Length: 501
Ligand SMILES: C[S@@+](CC[C@H](N)C(=O)[O-])C[C@H]1O[C@@H](n2cnc3c(N)ncnc32)[C@H](O)[C@@H]1O
Image 1: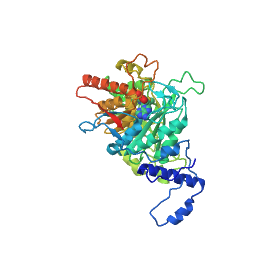
Image 2: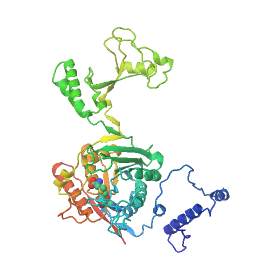
Image 3: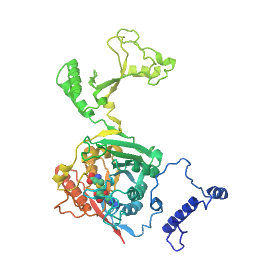
Image 4: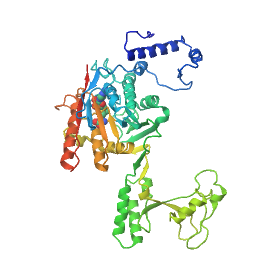
């Protein structure tokens, strides 16, 4: 179908959208020659952005419509935010108009967009995960026949929401999105389009350690966590605390306390490292105690590349006791002589008992408590019991412990965090937990649609009629527990509604 030219009586955003559609159609039909237009436009303040010849893009029915200019937001309002003080908010409404309504107050502000959207599994949990949803006529664009998994409908739903979310993100902002095998590749492709290929920080495999029992194909035991930055140069470095570092330091301290002999303490500690399950390979290397009681590991100082090092990188080190030269690595040292001298003077090089062994570098654990975030993270366990204890019927919530870790790895301690697919409110719970643990000042904006609770085993006989009631109740109960059990920690929640005329 060919689109028509903009109607002169249409409002400004509609005219703009119609113009884009009409113009794109004309170029595709060959009625407009972009080259000619460019030649004529030379010198005018107009730049034509043409698709790269080798650009890869995902297309689907309805894409152009969801890419068009958004409808006017004049009709959309949020209930006022109380006394205007920034605090933790739950906004009840369809997240697309909500995010557009938030543009005036929250644009360029969100440091961490942490979302767990529909996976398009074609099933119903506490909420409806079927695309298009069978209920019909919904405000969130998921409407139509009783269908199961329609990728186009999922994309038409997700695309404008991701655009709106990106527009709320600050320059240091990061998007962290949960997704499973159904739409992982699709999500990465549209995010590349929306955020830019270069801003893709990677996809983490979340190994849940328990393969799906009902699988007819490969039995997945993992999901994905997709990470994009608004600008990788400005976001915080992707680092996380070494999981067991503190425990290792404590074990070493306890070995030292329990005997007057350093040799004995070293032996006990090394046995503890060998016998402790759950340490990563890197952590288990920190098995030594220095003369001044610090935990360290040894690392080779050999030149790391295939080609050999420059000639001056071959100077032998003299053994401190025998005075004889120690062996030099076959391809040379990794550092120039000046750096080697400095390492020596700071006591960071360890020699063997005599000059027959190659000296190595000491790395102290207390100076290396953080590590890069790896592409595979194992976290097993579910929060079903926790939610049962809170009286909250919600299937497959994200575990608070895991969410708390992700929030603190991917966002600074003063981050503004937005989750526009709030569900049972795990993100709000995790933000409070992270603040309690590290004294951070994170705050959150959660959005949950007032959609009917999906009838399932978990929700049968429950008093909740719509999902937002579940979100709100959980957060209020969690806040009350914190107030009761954590002195001086008193989270509060502001609940607002979207008002659409
Ligand atoms: C996968 S669940 C999120 C679960 C959540 N991470 C937790 O741990 O409880 C997705 C949630 O997004 C909500 N949702 C779906 N479409 C929405 C929309 N257009 N606006 C706001 N919320 C929506 C659903 O009702 C559902 O509660």
